[in-house]
Image: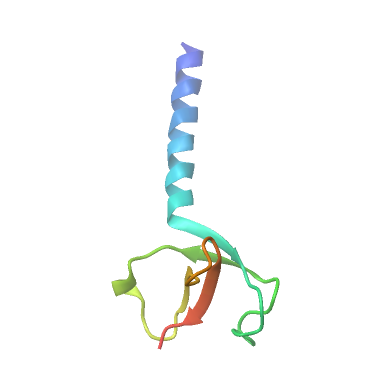
Length: 77
C-alpha cells in the first residue's frame, strides 16, 4: 500500500517537473550586446510564451539564425 502511494507521489512530481521544464529555460549570456542589463556569464531564467504576448521593453530569447541550438537575446522594440 505504501509503495503505491510513493509511486503515485513520484509520478505526480515527475509530471510537475516535466511541465516546469517545458515552460522555463535557463540561458547563459555570451557577448556584450545586452550590456548593461546582462553581462557575459549571467544566467537568465526565461519563461516561454507565444510571440503574441511579447511586449515592448521585454528581453526576448530566440534560436540564432543559422546556428542550431544557440540562443540569441534581444530587446523587444
